[in-house]
Image 1: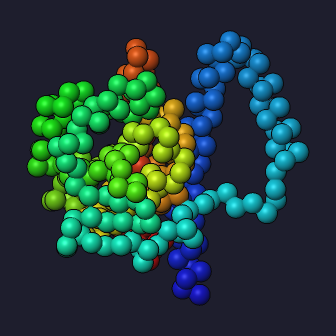
Image 2: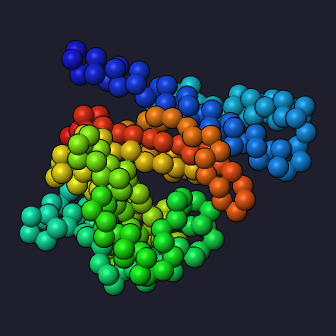
Length: 256
């Protein structure tokens, strides 16, 4: 009975952020319609077509809220932190970033798709990137897939007084996206944050146009804390910035 009550409480907590997510999706879709020349009165017509598709294809048994709790578990982490400062899950490993990685990371920063979705950008020179990672309120890691560098993940704005940090993640190798590498790297970083360092809260920021990223974060238990309207400027276009957060208690409840 207690487990059922816990699940019910978790559903209550996550349902409202999920509704916020849907509002963000709707807002982004509306902006795209206007951008492509759809007149405002015609937006209602588009909404009608969407409802028609829902009526034809919706499954009454589908579960709207999903998490990775059935796919990922704390017990699946290979914890070699005390011996080699590394954490692994299958063929994905995170370990402290090395100076040799900086040049590759700078090359990633110049790619158009990363400039569009990764905000704010890392410094775009090897020297400045090294200085960025060296600051005491940061802790960054290389993401390796079968021992090859494919991305960066780390902690920014580390606040020991409040036991919280900001998570930032980048899969730089485009051929490695969509393979579950970012998902496992994120889980390993959350393990580092909550189990090894015992932080109480991890938060992150995403652009409103990066709906896929927002949805994936929600499956780890992240919820939307707020929206900073038109807070980011990319290529002379302003975007909303979404802040999401996850507490250690919720994460451990989902993945223990």
